[in-house]
Length: 423
Image (cartoon, rainbow, N blue to C red; front, top):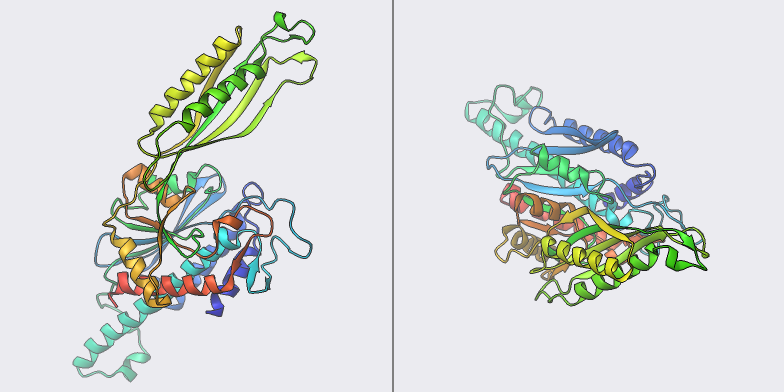
């Protein structure tokens, strides 16, 4: 299991920040690593490795081991991290990957290069298992015809033989742009990489839990236009900032009054960024505000857009002469838990076999690539399970416990053997 620590260190030491270096270098490294792993097992005629340019110079990767069934187990990871940022403690290098006090430190350590390392090793183990079983199937067939394994060892034992395949296909999908607009996973869905009945497991940090449900995510950009004037004669103008303040209060009040969901909790709203005006003694004629709403059923995107419409009307009535509008810059539906999920049951069993205790089930407070899949194609066979805690992601001094890396690597290996190889 020391392999998972070394591999996580290697990934953390490749800057893939978004915005920043992006995924070019790490994508090339991952492509080389996967290609070598496939060729090492002599599976170049069976396993595939594909690339997809989701954005200029930013490529998703998918490695696949085919299987006898149609629906795959897909391990989904994103290559990018948030920006490196400031505020790191002295002696902690954001791209150092150092191990100290039982923790591996660096940007992406838990979100999600640690989880990616676990998935890469699970895929590598699956390649080795496929190669072993393929050889055994061919060798045993040949032995029945009077040829022994020693004779086969020096030959192309698989030539002309029907290749042995796992019960269920295994995919490893490595996306781009997850930390921004998630256009990587959208491109993968459009390209047919993700089946509507595949089992989709992302490797986000989950604090040892299996996370299975997501709040929706609706992004607004509000724009208020007013009329400029001198601050000593404000009646000659129309204050765009004041109008925006009215819209904010109206929308916040309406959203916080929405009903609570029994599992996902309450709808929340954050006014993450605002800008307007240019001098304190001038009536501002422009103001913009960016809003993040995480919503739960029964609150739909359509309902929230209605509340935004009402907030605009309220603002314009309160501050005559202004015009307040909005655009929707992101719209992701909520995903409720599937109580009959085969993936979740298999993941629970694998975790219990490794740790001796059932993994708790919980919701996910963020929004993941697999949640995008559920929202776009209706596939609710999704789950999140990975090393580390979301509490330290996106922050200075990001880290992941070494024990978490080892646990999740073992669980993924067990899961793949159980699901794909019926072992």
